[in-house]
Length: 254
Image 1 (cartoon, rainbow, N blue to C red):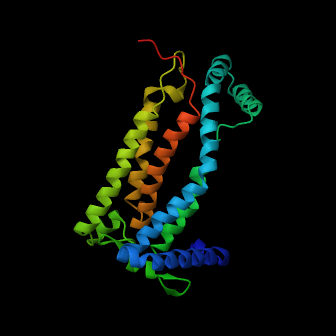
Image 2: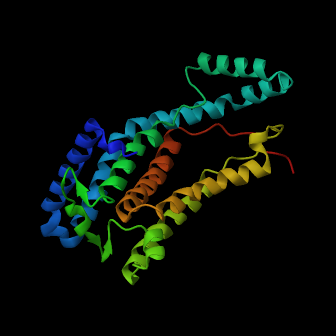
């Protein structure tokens, strides 16, 4: 089922195409064939700038959750044999602090429609009945509408495709590694919850690299959006962590 056959979504897609194509046209004297790629970067920066207030709320929520962690562990110890009572007590604690366990997820949810639009814009040969001119653009010779996986299995991969995707994936993996190291949760004495088990911590660390895996399956334009996003997110988190530092946990004794 094509969700963009629904008239409101079709109109939204056409409007997004017109705006991005118009911006690409304005940037052509500066960027040439890579004008659409530069337009994607500018749109990404605009989206991230608009989400700065949400990022601040996310940092505050993270600080609150860290402050509540000892109380949550005490509740887990007290009601470990009564999951229903534990859930009630935890939600009551979150309500008393005017927060929730899902606070801070808005940036991810807010960006999902943008990634979806970019994916669709650089996937369809036609938009609202007219040719999709965005597909004629590339980034240093790599077509913006081609994904790394489709190029590999379709036999259309070129050195430019490998080079451009290689750089983007390398940046995303490097950012993921820095994020994992800088924002790795410290082990806490007395915390024997499943979320703090070694296996769970390893799985959470691996999730940092999921964006890079996803980027190999989407058109280059969407991968470019993801690359700019993860770099922005890392810089923003470093700045906001200094503004909203987390309380220092009691480390596990050796």
